[in-house]
Image (tube, rainbow, N blue to C red; front, side, top):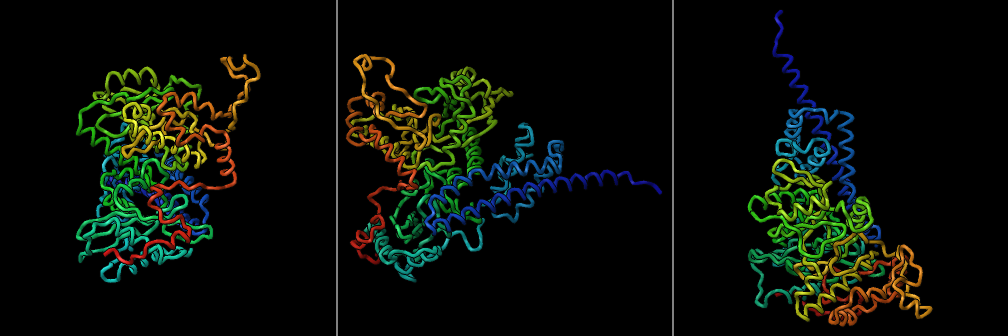
Amino acid sequence: MTSNPIAPTVAAGARTDDLAAGIADTILAGFDRHYRLFRYHAQQAKSRFEAGDFHGIRRLASERIAFYDQRVKEAVQRLHSEYQATAQSEVIWQAVKRHYVRRLSESHQPELAETFFNSVCCKILHRTYFNNDFIFVRPAVATDHLDAEPAAYRSYYPLLSGWRESVRGMLADFGLACPFIDVEQDIRLLLAAARAHLPAAFAPSPDCQIQVLSNLFYRNKGAYVIGRLINDADAVPFALPLLQDARGRLYVDAALFGSEMLESLFNFSRAYFMVDMEVPSAYVRFLRSLIPNKPDAEFYTMLGLQKQGKTLFYRDLLHHLSHSHDQFVIAPGIKGLVMGVFTLPSFPYVFKVIKDVRGKDISRDFIKSQYQLVKVHDRVGRMADTWEYSDVRFPLSRISEELLSELETTAPSLIERDGDSLVIRHMYIERRMTPLNIHLERVDATERARAIGEYGQAIKDMVAANIFPGDMLYKNFGVTRQGRVVFYDYDEVAYLTTCNFRRVPPPRTPEDEMASEPWYSVGPHDVFPEEFDSFLLGHSDIRKHFMAQHAELLDPEYWQDRQCRIRAGQLDDVFPYPERLRFGRGDSAQRAAAPTEETVQ
C-alpha cells in the first residue's frame, strides 16, 4: 500500500486548529466568569439599597474594580499551564483570534469580550504582536443594534394611559422592595418640575413616550432612574434620584432635566455606577442619545467597565492622531515634584508619568498605591479619575523637542525609542483641566469669589468621603469646563481618620515665637489647620472670599468633628445636583406643601 504524504500535514493542521479552538474557549470562559460576577455585584447593589446598607454599596463598588484584573490573571495562568501559551506560534495565535470571533456571534457583550481577549494576549505576547492580526485593534463584532430580551429600556405612553399613570407605572416597574413615603406626592412634584422645564407651548404629539432604562443606577445612597421624554422626535433627557428616609421609605428627591444635568451625574470625578446590564452597548447607546458630546469611553467607564473605557479611549486617540498634526507638549502650570505631565493641545486629556528623579522621598510603588486608593474610593465629584496604561506607543514626530528632553531627563526608565515611535512603559491619563492657580490669576473678582467657594467646597466634599488631600495648594486643583473645582494630585492623599488634627501650641517664650523652627513636636500624621492660612491666603482678595465662605477649614475642631462622624459610621450626603433642585430632603412636612399639578399639559 502506498502511504499518503498529505495525511501528516492534514493531521498537523487539525491539531493546530484544535489547539487554537481550546485556547479561544479558555479565554472566553474567563470573560464569561468575569461578566457573571460583574452582573451579580450589580444585582447585589439593588438588595443592599433596599436594605439601606449604603456602606455595603460602597464596598461592592470598590471590590468590583479589581475583578477584571483577577479574571485576566486566572486566564493567563490557565493558558500557561494547559497550553504552554507563550511557546505557541504566530499561526496558532492568528487562528485563536478567528475562533474567538466566531464564538462572539451569539454574545451579548462582544465588545467587552474582545477587550478581555486583548488583555490576556498582552500578558502573553510581545508588543510587536499588538496589531489587528493578533488582537482587536479594531472591533470585529458590531454592537450597533444589539439588544436583549426584554429590551434595555421600557416605554410608557401618556396619551394612552395618562401622565400620572405612566409615571406611577414607571416607578413601580423597577420592583423595589421598600415602599414609597407618598408616591402620589412624588408624581405631583415630578410633573410640576417637568412642566416648569418644558416650553410653555408644549403639547403631546402622537409619538409622545417616556422611555427609561430598565434597571436602576446605584451609587452611594441613591438609585437613579435614567430616561428621556420623546415628543415629536425630540428627546428631553432626565434623571430621577430615589433616596430613602430614616425609616427606609423611598422618595423622589429631584427631577433633573437636560444633557448638562445628566452630565454632572456621569462626570469623570464621580464613583462608578452599579447597574445590571445584559447588553451594555444598548445602555451606552441610550446614554449617548442623552449626552451626545460625551465619548463612549467615558460612558463605559462610568458604568464600571473601565477596561472597555480604556480600549475605546486608545482607539479615539489613534483616530485623533491620524486626523491632526500638532505636537505633544509639556502641560501648562507649575511642574510637579513627582509627576511629569504633558498634553496634546487639540485633545482634551493629559498624560502623566511618575518621574525617576522626584522632589519627594517616596517610591514609585507608593505613588501607584495612592492612585489606586483614589480609583477604588468614592470620588464625590471632587477627585479626577484616571486610566492607567502600559507600553503606550507615540509617534516620535509628534513629540516636541522640549517634551522629549524633559522625559529623557526626568523619567528615562519609562521611555524607549522603537524605530519611529516612543514607547512609554507606564502612565496615567485623565481629563484636562485648567490649574486653579492659573484660573485665579486670569479671572475677574466675581469669578474669583465663585472659584474660591468651589475650592473650599471641594475640600469639604472630600472630607465627607474620608479623604484628606494633603497638599492643598491651588496648583493641585483644576477647574473643569463646567467651572467645577477638582483635585488631581494624589501623592499626599490620606484617609481623614488617619490624621491627627492639632491646634498650634502657644509659644512659651519670645524666643519661641521668633524661632525659624517649630517649638513643639510634630508627629508624622499631625496636621495643623491654622497653618493653612500662611500658604493659601496670601492674596487679600482670595483671603476675603475664603474667610467669608470656609473659615472653619482653619479650625482643628472642624476636622476633628468630621473624623468623629466618619468613625461613628455616618455617611454625609454629597449630592451630584444642585440643592435648589431638591424637592424637600424627604421631610414629609416640606413635601406636603408641594404644588398639585397633575399633568404637564
